[in-house]
Image (cartoon, rainbow, N blue to C red; front, side, top):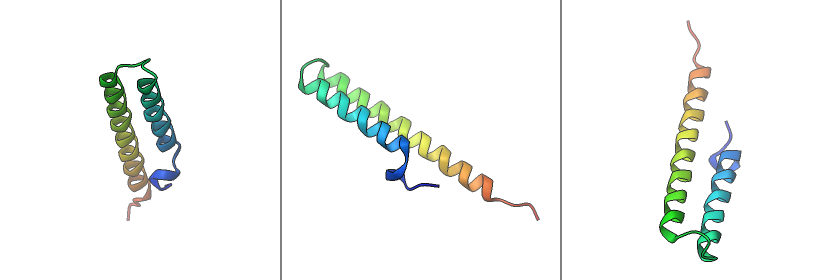
Length: 64
């Protein structure tokens, strides 16, 4: 399993947060919506990392 910062999920989350920030600065997106978008992206990233870690543990188990 890759470290968090080496995963594609991390970079997709980072780009979505930076994109919403850029749109907010350019007044294309209200700041409140940019915060909501960042929170959703962060939450989905946390869920995806949790699932990846859960699958990693699950797959390493062997039955004796």
